[in-house]
Image 1 (cartoon, rainbow, N blue to C red):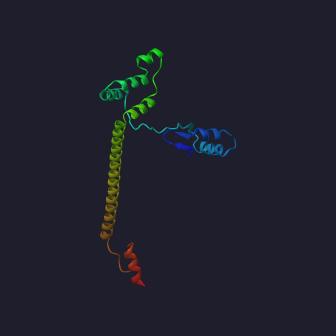
Image 2 (spheres, rainbow, N blue to C red):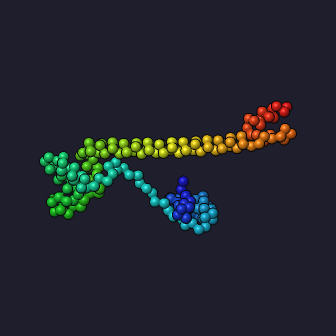
Image 3 (spheres, rainbow, N blue to C red):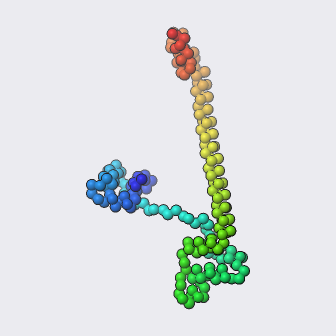
Length: 189
């Protein structure tokens, strides 16, 4: 949806494209926004920021972590030279005034150079995701069990109330509900 009413922030949130379309007088978006503003007079209109999904499957991998891994796995120093070139820290890069590549570019290079490391991290992340999913399922199962127990407790309380009621006189209509009432009506006919 292009428009959201956010009660917590007292805001009418719209996408940039919706806001642009709503700025055209008489458009469908304009009418929708005006209706939302009338229904929520104290709310302000804000444009939502788009979140870009992260493709970083190796989270929190710092340059120092990369450096330590390269030191441990680079026998001739050639990979470390590439890393320093990418970071803009090598002597050659300093002479030429070359700045560092973006983190995402360096991470992509690192994962290509050390696919086993990236595969291990992805496998670990998958395990964590599975553990979180299992914990969530366990939590939902506990909530379902709690609800079942609450329903049973209420049903038991209703049954106790029904049994504790004094029986109706023969000339009074029965106050029972459910099957008891149906049986009583059937016997009268």
